[in-house]
Image (cartoon, rainbow, N blue to C red; front, side, top):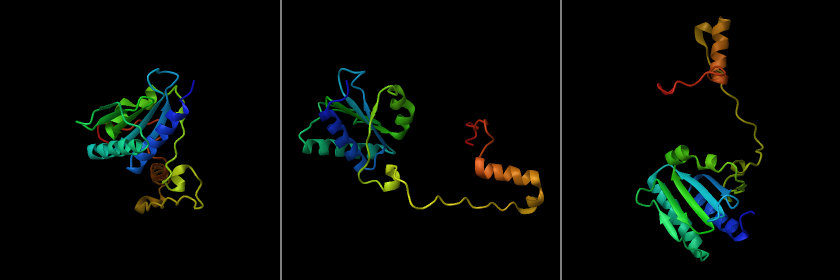
Length: 175
């Protein structure tokens, strides 16, 4: 069983409203096979509590224009993770930190996603190919060690590849 047509349309409306208020990482997950209480989750992130509130307000307003009202609203006081329950669709607007920590996409990874493309995004953001090739990486001046093959290879490896393959980043020092 997949999400109903009405749920898919509601989810698309909510996702576009969130995107219009500059939400990031907007996605729709079809949870209808796993949950009996709803058909789809709309997931969206924001970098601040104020932005979370703005996104929530826009989603509610846009769906009200289509005669769809939330039956439950939770989390507005803290505005770190706000949940809007529209019965067939549940909208989760999370602060970016909460989104990374709780990783709802990982929890629901067995569920299919419903494609969403922001109608106002530039073509490159929508997955369309661009006519321009990517910019070249500037060449690093190696200074006095330019004749030293080992120094040249090490600097080139760092500039192109970053840390050596398999090397774990040093999280304690922030590098």
